[in-house]
Amino acid sequence: MRAAVLGSPISHSLSPALHAAAYRALGLTWWRYEAIECDEAGLPSLLDRCGPDWAGLSLTMPLKRAVIPLLDRIEPLVTQVSAANTVLLAAAQRIGYNTDVPGFVRALAGRGINEEAQPGPVLILGGGATARAALAALRDLGEHSVTVAVRNRDGAADLLAAAGRLGTAVTLLPLDAPSLPRARLLISTVPAGASELMAQLFARLHPAPEVVFDVVYYPWPTPLAAAALAARVPVLGGFELLLHQAALQVELMTGRTAPLTQMRRAGQAELSKRAGPRTA
Image (tube, rainbow, N blue to C red; front, side, top):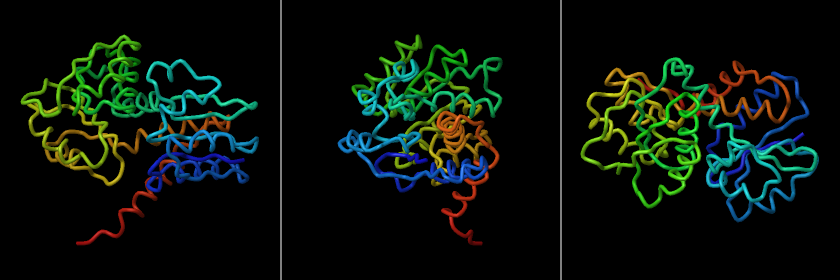
């Protein structure tokens, strides 16, 4: 049985290590999971080539929205956030799911942020698919008013549309605003290349947030995470989000409970290998 993660670029993906560890722990020796370079133009033909030996697909940039018209059915959450990161291939159908949202919820719960200890006020950095997933997760945790800082207000139309569907009020600000509102929780959804800018932004927050969640998992720590740690602010890294959303994908594709401990161990080992030997 086959499964894969699709995206472009994809060589950096940690998903093969996580899913392969799950298959080993579950005794699914005939299952294999790979990373496949695929852009929007190549997605339709790749989906057409997935036969009955395929269980499902994980999707990352830039495919989470592009895949939706190619699916037979989607769960309501996909419609709400306009993003599917998982395709289940079953009974000759393509069924779209979003495991990023519940992955966010589980990752935040690990830091004690849940429906009983609500996260607000919240500041989200970035306005893409991951930011939309964060909005939905915060909605599930009872937070219905969020501030979002973006580079380009004109590019935030999808975010605002998702917020409307979720019943969440969004205050939109530019990332370079001279002042940003107080936030108990800061969530950065920007890619690794912009993390230096995020570290500079962190220095402008007074008071500092109580928790920082940076969705980047490699390289780690990001400049934002390092700035937060230097200020003694607890930091949640993107590995936790990746782990929990991958565990949910494993459960969708295999029908079995994901072995979270083994997946965590394998992911951390792979990240340590990528980091290379430490020097004194």
